[in-house]
Length: 300
Image 1 (cartoon, helix red, strand yellow):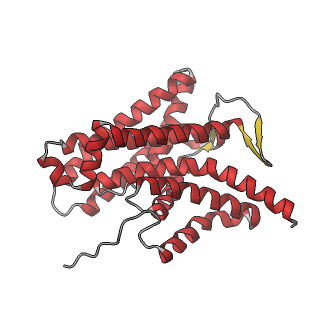
Image 2 (cartoon, rainbow, N blue to C red; image 1 turned 90 degrees about the vertical axis):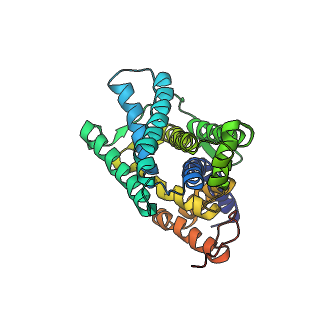
Image 3 (tube, rainbow, N blue to C red; image 1 turned 135 degrees about the vertical axis):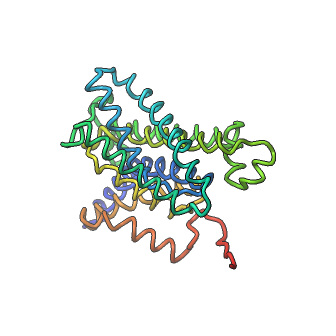
């Protein structure tokens, strides 16, 4: 392989990796924000993403809704559904002592419920194509080629992340979320409603997952098992540091670029093990993740 081909592969791998990494980063953000404010690792994140894709598809096919109406409607429904799940299920589970494992099991229950609902609808029986509003065509950047849809995915993801960090930093709601993430008891003492903030966090997490799903759905075939992409989002969160929101974004891009470079230089079969190799390397060199804080040791 001569240097010209190597340089071409590097450019294409980085460009494609930024696109897929943007989606991983969105899902990792959704996972980390829930974990920071509720101490719950949401194992239903992938299924929320999957269900959002099918919900939009259902609205378009069954109700013949215009795609530009189906998209915001899907985001609103998923936001509401996630908030209702937090209020009706997780809040009740959390009211019982010794609930850490129970909360995780509740999210696993949600993942099976969503899969079951999609299969029950009949839409999950066969892979389906999601319509796209982006015209066909490609743009060449350097020597790399990206479709118009790739450009839309990348730019929209960056806009969503920027809006999220603005909300998290400068709005009253975002500051309340940060306060709950730092110290729940102190936040309650200064008058912040933990119930309201945790519902808002789950709604925000659901909305981000729905946006990620709607962005990537036209590139994939819809299947009930498409939620496995959340594994890569967890990998991104671990690489970046599980409590760091910027780390989740950086981790997503690292995983996306690493996957694409390995696929071009090594083999497409090696792609599946790439995230776990990256995780092991990061954990060996920096156990708390690239942006994680110092490791705290609790003595019993």
